[in-house]
Length: 315
Image 1 (cartoon, one colour):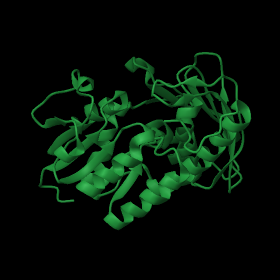
Image 2 (image 1 turned 90 degrees about the vertical axis):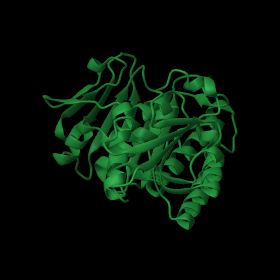
Image 3 (image 1 turned 120 degrees about the vertical axis):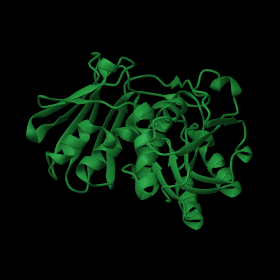
Image 4 (image 1 turned 30 degrees about the horizontal axis):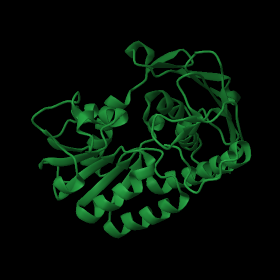
């Protein structure tokens, strides 16, 4: 990208997650114009209103040439949004929120479309960007046959957040070829706060081709989230909360800050402007993880809840 020009950045979807992206966009080091697409005008009443932010209700109203677009809608409408966007506008780079799509076939279709349009894309599974896990990676703590456990409590939902842990496991082990060996639920299906979607919690066992194993376990205690690397007798403690004091983690005795989304998206955008790339998973790589997860979720819904679906109702 040409660094001297003003960069056009577009955000589609300004709900709870979209707002965090928007807050981060205001921290970008380069000159940018921000255009926000949100059909529900009421959702933008308490969002930032500065000179370089414009709000629209339709995609067709934004600039014809978009350098970077963040799509933070729910998964059920994201494919439709993507197709409308790239058919009407010239887009160079796209960051997609997770869960990207609810059907495995949608990934193949959109990846093909992006190749035709010469669009580079990534998925916002942000744990790999967190300094606490970059430190683990830097220390070469993970070996091929490492066993990792990820214990979670109250602020985590398996149906919506499992993809984050799968991506983190892939990042730490350098392996996107995962197999979900077992997944069990310990809660009833609950309606999500997003219409038409479901939430559930439980436990999951995952392996990779290098002999590594991931165990995702639910704990009743409200201790945040712990990642344990068993071969190194290492416990990594992290938590994400509304209080900034909650946003810390420890690798051994080293205290490391936990960066919230409102201070992450700006890092992605800075990198893309500078080098046309960022450290998130590409859509192609994330698709491998999503497909494995969606297949397991669909099987779980059918066998445990007698709920047979084509599009997996998670977001």
